[in-house]
Length: 239
Image (cartoon, rainbow, N blue to C red; front, top):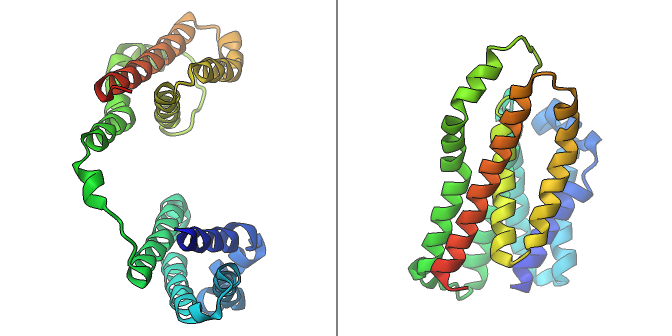
């Protein structure tokens, strides 16, 4: 497992620590003709050898270097301004996936995935995470529908990021679920306080009482569902 950790460390160091913004811009501009692109992938290969501290892994480092180059080229040629986030996530997923696959076939570790799949707590966890991310977002949207329409029909014309509320709600519910399962109840109060600080300006400057009530109700419903979900998980798993 230490080898896998070092391979991932080499990737993270090469992609996020030792890659200047100028290199990224050069790759996006010149694509396969970019010298910085090849310096970048060679750096990855060198980091792998350095961290593993064994030149015997030169073939593994070479394969990972070529794989990294192919994935980067795929991203460079298909990434557009409107899908940069999607391609960033896909790029990192492909890099990490290639590391895991090569590690598995190179070292043949004993990964008992069947034990994980057969564990009922694993499926319970997947179900609750799906509920907290996707299902609850839709549920709260319908619960808040009447209040949302009331605010949209008001005279206020303030702009907001697309689906920002949905993503904020997903993150806060995941945080709360982790806090409940790990027993860090005090962290929930910290999260609520932090959110209150950020929303204080909205509530203070909002002349429409309905907006204040809408924000408070939405926050309490989101927090309440997340806390109950965490408690149900603890009860069902006998933690």
